[in-house]
Structures are given as structure tokens and as C-alpha cells.
Image (cartoon, rainbow, N blue to C red):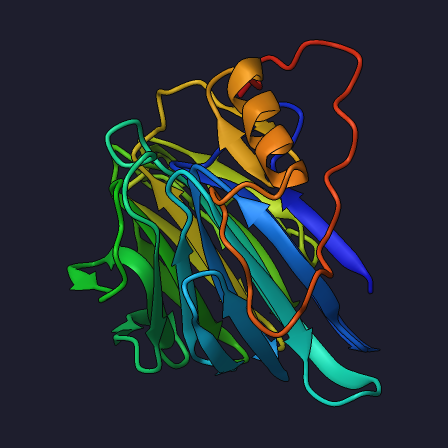
Length: 298
């Protein structure tokens, strides 16, 4: 499978509590991700094309399609698998994101949610048609997703019509980023200062690039010639230092070592995923250097 990673980056470990973003696709592939562990995070799975079967150590066994959300909360430990349907190659395109759990929630109960219907809103257009935004996680312009969150944040999919220019409201105290999923966008006058000074910024992110907007912005204006599908991520800046390695989000080298050893020894911490027998993803060896928190340089 071809996987493209937009987050974390060397200079930017998080956007709000969002700490990871992979896109697998679009491609013809057979997806077989065997049982593997997570801790200290929530996984957000958002298909764009195709279907994904999710099974986890809570006993969940669901089929996920485009426009539906799978949200798995790992707490201190959970395991899951992800398969495409059938034995051969199928069309598949999906996002998987991680949200770092804050200290007050990261040792809490693990859980799984499936949301087949998510709220939408229309973003106003100064040119052309208004854009449709689906609020996947958190809140946008007062519209709130039913999915459980533990930090103030937003995750939204925005569909912009060809030839349109739309205004996307932002929470000024949060930081935000955009990812172009399809089509083309041009970011214009993307903060209040630029707008007042009459500056018309011409920023054209490439497909799957993370365009970091920073904080202290109350909106971004997006224009598209051919139409676009855009992911908006944002949230209150995450102040806790994170140590991330493999599928774990912790706070120290020792926490990561303990989690890895418990997965490797098949302890009860992460549980078992039904239907796979003894098959699982083995833990890789620990690096020879001490793991340290990822430093922010932006």
C-alpha cells in the first residue's frame, strides 16, 4: 500500500491535539493490517473511497464506508485490525488520524464509536456557491460533532465548488492547518491583519501537503478553480510534551518500553482481536537511543 504522512513533521509535532495524519490512497490494493496495539490516543478513520472492516479487542466488528466515522479511544491500551473487503485488490482511499489524549484522559477507559451521520453546515461564498463542511470531530462555527473529544479541537471536511471563493471561520485562540485532499485551492487574505492591509495572499498548497495557518486567525478564505476537497484541522495548542514511537503516544521513554514489552509478551493489557488466531503485528525493536519528546519549532 502507498501511504503518505502529513503529520507529525520535524518542526511541527501537533496541530492542537492532532498528532498524526496518514492517507492511504487513492489506489487499487488489498489492505491487511493485522492486530496491532495503541495507547494514549484516539484513532479517527475517515474513508474517502471504498470500505474498511474494523475489528478490535472490545469485540467491535464493523464495516466503514465514505462519510462515516470510526473513533477508537485507546486509553491505556487497545488492539485492532483493518481489512479491505474480499481477497483481491479494491479501490481504496482513506485517512487515519490520531488525537493525543491529555493527561486527565489517557489512562481512562478504552472505547469505540461509530457515527454514520455527522452534522454539516454551509460556509458563505463571496464568489460562486457556498461550501459544504462536514464536522467530523469537535466544533466548527457552532456546529458540534457527536463524537467524543477530550480536548478543544476541530476536524472538518470542506467541499468547495468550482469557481468559488469561501470564508472558513476559525477560532482565534486555536492553531489550524489545511490539507488539500483533491482539486486545487488558493488561500487568500488568511488572517484579519492581511485583510485590513489589503494583502491578497497567494498560497497554493499541493495535494496532501499540510498548510499550517498558526494561531491568532479568525478566518481563512479559500478559492478553487476546479473544485476542491479540503481537510481542516485545529485545536487549542497542546501543551503537554509527547513521546511518540510506533503506535504509542506517551510521556516518557519508560512508558513506551513498558507498552512495547507488554504487547510483545501478549499481556492482557491490549486484549485480543477475534478472528485472527495468533496472527498479530510484532513489536519492532526499541531504538538504541533514548526516546525524547518531539520539539516544536514553529
